[in-house]
Length: 229
Image 1 (cartoon, helix red, strand yellow):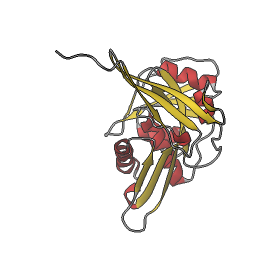
Image 2 (cartoon, one colour):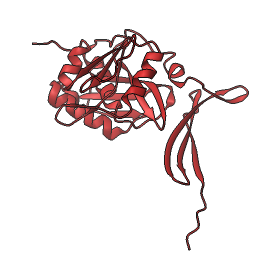
Image 3 (cartoon, helix red, strand yellow):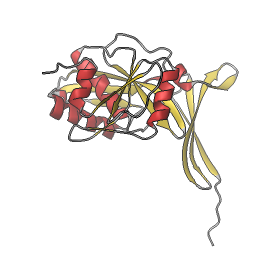
């Protein structure tokens, strides 16, 4: 006889050098939950963060290359996060340093950049991180990784009014991700004016212009990091 001994598994995550800590629900009696709660370490202990997206973007720089905001989802919570990238000429074997994201996802996006955008990232050191010490694994991060990387390489900042969300295929196509409406509502609540997403547009939100593209080339052009022929 097998007896069920675990009702729920919770994990606290976070870098001790950062103020934020994540409480992640890994499993409950009925299976995986993938829920996420954000807390701040204050003088009196852990304090719940009521608006995680706003807190994580509070120190986001403007008009600086290598930064992109992604409308992500973790568990049942839409959350906006900043992806930062720094790509520079490599001296010796190129390095890949990734914090807060799946390194395999970053490697895939870098390969697509080289193949479909013609940028020689294989000759560069590449550094990526999610700011605030958070860690996420959402396919929508793909477009943010590419946007931040291309911005770093070209030196063209992503306008602060833009938020992105989308999965990238190996053939250079953009693919929609789930719960797009909730992602865009979160972006709207934080005052973003434009959202770049894959595929056909079905969301109409006051004050938020939702723009769709089908390929990575068109997406980068839309963000001002390429020229239309």
